[in-house]
View 1: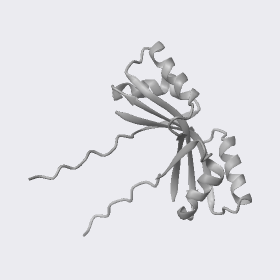
View 2 (view 1 turned 135 degrees about the vertical axis):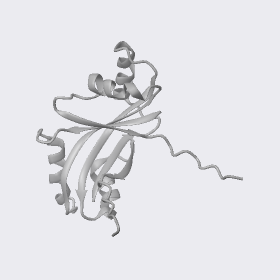
View 3 (view 1 turned 45 degrees about the vertical axis):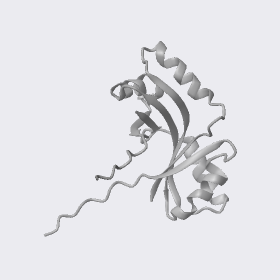
View 4 (view 1 turned 90 degrees about the horizontal axis):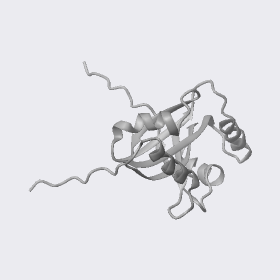
Length: 83
Length: 83
């Protein structure tokens, strides 16, 4: 399984990168962008997806200050036309 | 629109963070994980999604060495039961 782990700061945790992006946007002429958060994405091929939460909590994230979400990055299965 | 921008190193570009994760996993007892890449995730509320590609190319990514993907992070619309 090709998986993506999306990691972002928990609500209430300081996010200086997000603040920096949000402040830079109006200076470049982009208005109407709010609530910016910067996190990480880890893509990996994993044989046993059941171990992914443990991998996330032990290596990929800091569970004290970060939330994560696991999403599949497998390409959609090709649809087979029935004869 | 709540959007997520997923950024990762282009194929062929050195990814030392991905290599570090991949090498650390077997030492922690996690086998069967390959092809690890570490990138960034930026979450934002944007009024005009049509401007997102320009925002990505001018501020959020380095198009020379990074690929990006824009995905919606809107919650699915609630289904309304018909009376």
